[in-house]
Image (cartoon, rainbow, N blue to C red; front, side, top):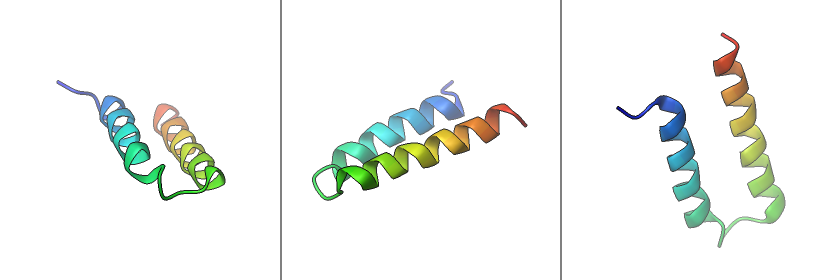
Length: 45
């Protein structure tokens, strides 16, 4: 069974592939930062 973090990782890669053509690099960096914050809070609950 796929873990939630695996799902987030796969979804992020798919999301990045779709949006990389439309997003500015700083927007992609922001999304990566948001994911890191989210994963960090999940680990420490």
